[in-house]
Length: 93
Image (tube, rainbow, N blue to C red; front, side, top):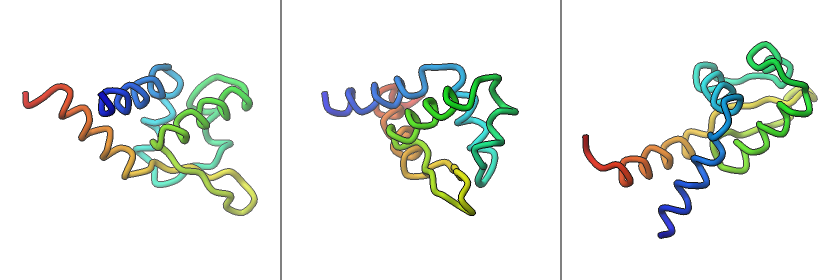
């Protein structure tokens, strides 16, 4: 059951189209600054910030203050864990 709860938390974090778009964008770029995201999703800065916080809390992305600007990247460990959990849940195809 613990694995199901962990997978459900990942799925919930990815359960919004804007968060999926942000995660996809980050997975294709090494790092991104906060201002870059407004080009990806047509949302206010505060809404983007909330979506990024959900992804970070789930362990899918990381943030840091680089040159006093918010810098974001994918957390490889989080994505690997998501892959493992999906593999266990779905099984071999």
